[in-house]
Length: 461
Image 1 (cartoon, rainbow, N blue to C red):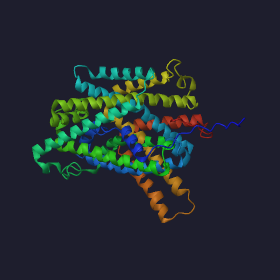
Image 2: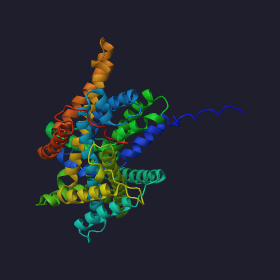
Image 3: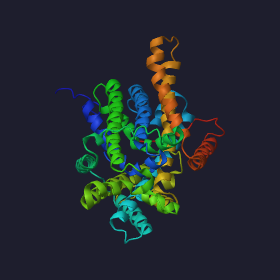
Image 4: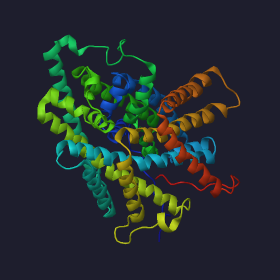
């Protein structure tokens, strides 16, 4: 009788290639990510929305290098929290994770808000507040039933979005050529207009436009399934940021050329709510100008579908994050660690996130929500850049010029640009975000007995 071999542990297979990761990153970010931001970014930057997207891209490229390098060092981690905990200190890692929690909570909020904006654009007869209630309820009920959006649906949605965006860009090109001739397609004004250029408005707009790139770091969660992860993850993160920047910049460039006078979107509007609404739907107005009602409706539906899809997955992501924290004992297990017996969903958390999202959707507008997401994200980006510098430069006993150029400068530049973007967020964002961070530090102090004990690991899986 032959001796039975012991079972080998089941491991994830390293099958993903560079192109697989890049496509995954683009799906995470979405091909239409920049379009909802157009009106606000263009107004804030005084007609330099393209410049704000490209400036944000530079910071994201260097930050992507740091993420890729940390993913090569900790290939099973896949989160800023772990990189900072391992690279610098668990306490700073916790604060970074706490800042990410705010992102997880505000992404469902912004999705509810933008779903309501687009739906109200299609059917203005139904009040905006009723749309907010409807989408918050829809996301919550679907997630309570354990609904999962299949990967194939993401592919189908991405293809549809890409087709509509190509349609929009083609219609804009045709419109510009008919109006201004072929030479009208070439202008530096969307990037640099001497009559309206000012660094402070551009920096403020960049702090908003950076939302275009949020999600690229999700690539690092697949590190265990990538061929040659030390090289591939870094390259994929950088390429994803470059492709996103060029693709998004091209869309916004054509939008700006199609509607050069950025002041007319809010002209004659006397209330802040009316001005915000006009900027929220500015891209639909441009779609109507270049392609008529068909393109207007098509783009609005695509933006609505994208927002609904993101909202459903964002709410379940936030609820599962809270479940992981509850299960690990970081927050009370009895409530946050509870699972529904029938559907095996963290139903208490889903209802809590839905209620918070609905309440905040009535209080915040789209721009404010976007900036609060960037507040948490860019704190995490800065922390990862710093962790990369510590791991690959400061912990080396002997440092050469090569170390300075390869291990210090990329992360240092990323840190400086991210800090520049972060510091140009409005004071209201800093007040709200700062209060959230202080709550996290206060909770950490209680949990660790005045910073004397170790902190439990937050599960971001």
